[in-house]
Length: 151
View 1 (tube, rainbow, N blue to C red):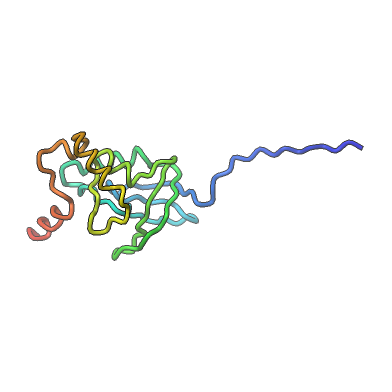
View 2 (view 1 turned 30 degrees about the vertical axis):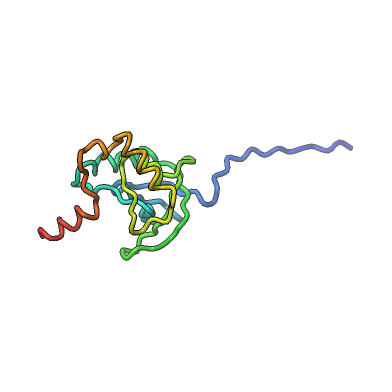
């Protein structure tokens, strides 16, 4: 008696992949997880505010990296706004690191836990990439503090 071999084709998506459905700014995105939106703040970095120089470019950069794509993330914390703080990968790219490499975000020294990121930032500065093309870019934490004082 002959045995038949059955081959099943499967387009499998890893269980940890979640569709990116929103980009708020250069360091915040939203994924769908079990049909629920989950807002994720990128760990270790801080991107320019939307109204700040390079704010829109930073948002566009993150959008190019992730919007409409599957993302995987490693949660490291939950911030005071209830957002998941995580290292995010879209299509095999660590987007936290890539935003810094493109000059679209600073290493957030106060919260950084990735010892390789300062070197990535130094290379971006040296190449005058993105926000580093300005003579003296204002870090977002300083921008927010100044904006708060003028309210």
